[in-house]
Length: 98
Image 1 (cartoon, rainbow, N blue to C red):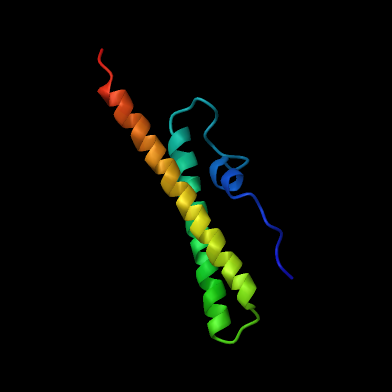
Image 2 (image 1 turned 60 degrees about the horizontal axis):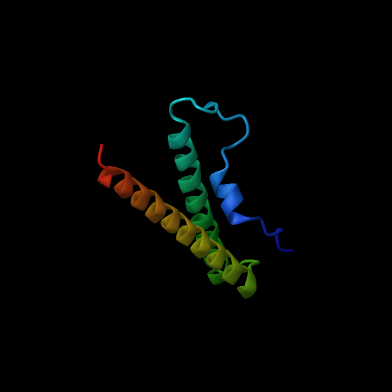
């Protein structure tokens, strides 16, 4: 049976409940960024595990593997686009004259 589909953007960006960094505290952005990168890595690992399981004759079906790899690809693309937007915003701030 397939696991339920969860929204990628919300799960990978929101900080975990019980996080030590409170709103406005130093390190909050770094923690959120670390959680997002970890979520991307977990999706990639899950896709790799599904591929290995299918290739070794495990219980994985082709459509499950295709969904896992697509989910990992979309998560990576989302992270890449967020990174590009953050870099663009940083460059724009650096161009501002004081």
